[in-house]
Length: 127
Length: 238
Image (cartoon, rainbow over all chains, first blue to last red; front, side, top):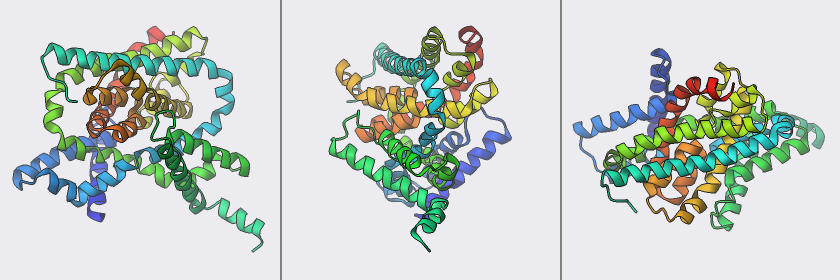
C-alpha cells in the first residue's frame, strides 16, 4: 500500500516539477498521469507483467482504492459554495441557465462527433 | 472541560471537519446506493449539502472547515495520477479510438465555452462573471488559473466547476440512454470532457471502459480549454 501510494505521489511530484519547470500548459497531476503511463510501458518492456499482476500490485491496489472514492475528493472544494450564496442569488438564473444548456449541448456535441468519426473510419462500437 | 468548551475546542480542529466530511460522504453514498445509483441522486451534491448545512448550523467559516477538509482535497492529485493504471490497461482500445477522441475533444471543448458564454451573456451577466464561467468544463485547478489570468473570480469559478461536474454526472446517463447510445467509450469521453472529475467518477460507477475514456477526456480538456479560451473571449465576452 505504501509503495503504491509512494509511486502515485512520486509521479505527481515529477509532473508538478516538469509542468512548472518547463511551463507546460497542463496541470501537474495530468503530466504525472502521462509520465506514469510511459513508465508502466517501459517497465513492461523490461520486465513483462500481465493485467492481473498489475491489478494485484501495490500500485494497482492504491490506484483502485483512490478511484473508487473519486467523488469524495470533490466535496471540500464544493462546500466552497457557502461563500458565494449572495453572488449566486444575484446572478443565479443566468449562471444556472448557462451551465445547464452548456453541459447538455457539450455532452451531445462530444458524443455525436465521437460516434460520427468512428463510423467514418469504419470502427466497430465497443458495447 | 464543559461541553461548550469542548465544542469550541473540537470545532477548530482539523480532526472534527475531516471526520464530518467523511461521515457526510458515507451518508450521501448510502442514500445514492438506496436509490440504486439513480443519476439524480448524486453523492457529491448530497455530501456538499450536508456539510454546508452543518457549517451554517454551527456558524463555522469555510476557512476553518477547509483546514480539516484539505487532507481529503489533497487526494485529488494522486487520484488523477491513478487514472494512469486503468488507462494503461486499456491502451489498445484507446489507441484504436484516437481519431474519434481528437475530433470530439476539439468540437466538445469549443461548444462548452461558446454555449456557456452565449447563454450567460444573453441573460445579462457582467464580464467578470463571464470570464469566471468560461473555463468550467476544465478541472478545478486549471479553470481557476485561467479565470485569474483573464480577470475573473477564481473561487466563483471553482464553485461553477463543481456545479458543471454535478450537472453532467446527473444528465449523462438518462441522455445517452434516451439516445440509445451504447458505446461506453463515447459516453465516457463525453462526460469526462463536459464534467471533468465528477463526470469521471460517475462514469466509473456506471462502466469501467466509460471511466477510462472519461479520465482521458478530462486530462485532454485540462490542456485544450485553457489554450483556446484567450482566443475566444474577446469575441464572446466583449
